[in-house]
Amino acid sequence: MSGRDHDSGADSRRSSRWWGLLAVAVGLVRTQTRTARGRTLATILVVALTVANLVLVTGVALALADDGEAGHDADARIVADDGDLLGSVAGVESPRLGESPDRAERIADRDGVDHASPVLREPIRVDHPDADGSAYLLLVGVVPGDEPSTVAELPTADLEPAGSSDARIVLSRAAAAELGAEPGDPLSLEGVDTRSTTVAAVEDGSGDEAPVALVHLEVLQSLSGAEGSGLADEVLVWGEGDAIREGAAETYPDAALEGEGAPDVRALFGDGLALATSALALVVALGICSLLVATTAGMRVEADRRTLATLGAIGFPTPSRLAVVATTTLATATVGALLGVGLGIVGIRLTNALATATVAPEAVAALHPLLAPYALAVALVSTLLALPYPLSLAARTDVLAEVGR
Image (spheres, rainbow, N blue to C red):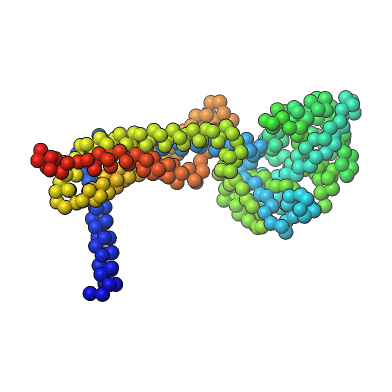
């Protein structure tokens, strides 16, 4: 027999042995489900509840981070993602979207899209003649829709409709304090030209107390000289995910679509409270799950010592018996993890329904496609951390003593 044939035969025997061990482990899980239902269900429930809690708390953290990062309530946003879309001096300003009013209108005309608004941000000098106050404010230009919405954490409802000759401005409290302005006061906006406006409202604004103001997009484009090219930093879209994706692909094929109803995971690392919440949930999940899995798996090994001894008596060496124990523990934990993911998703939906029906104006927990694999990975790591204890118990099983009992 050649060396190659010998190696092939060894690989075949090794593969057959591992498949045999897997079959034994699966059979043992089935037997335990019938004869040791309590211990098996205990392991499954421990993992399921821990994973469900992890999914729910992480969903809350994602919603918290995404809300604080976005500053708007749109379902998605379109941003420039290509040098060809650069509408300013290369290397000086970030890329901007061109022809934004016309293209946003085309997106808004699609079935399933409620509204689409270009958003332009420019620092503009604002004067308050009556109070003799003056300050540079970050003006945010938007096109208000038929339904109330929020941009830059300021409501758009008080802005004038498109085509109106009445220019109005919504100030954050920080901006109003710098100008000494109140609702109804006249202001002067200085840019490429000078525009007169009236303070429509003073709102709480951004959490960092930045001096921000909201105006109609046409006003800000006129002040900044961007009306000819229709420049905008982004386009916010409200509506259904599929309609938004199709509209974005048609109007801005080279731009990036962000959001689409799912929170931005990167925002989690920019929000200290949200990151701390998710990290704490991870630590608790790893600690509690690994400890309880180790305990329940150890109890199961103690109850199955005679079965393990029987396997040893018929020729299974210690490593093979340990492989059976590890496989049964991982299989049971996987079932619990899958159940926990389902419970976590249901928990997020129930939490949002309860919150919006009582105290919250919008969802307080977010679902993300990465939540499921993340929770499953945490459950797997917890189980691996728990394995040394049941494996050490199984390794100390005295075959002769157990078989002789």
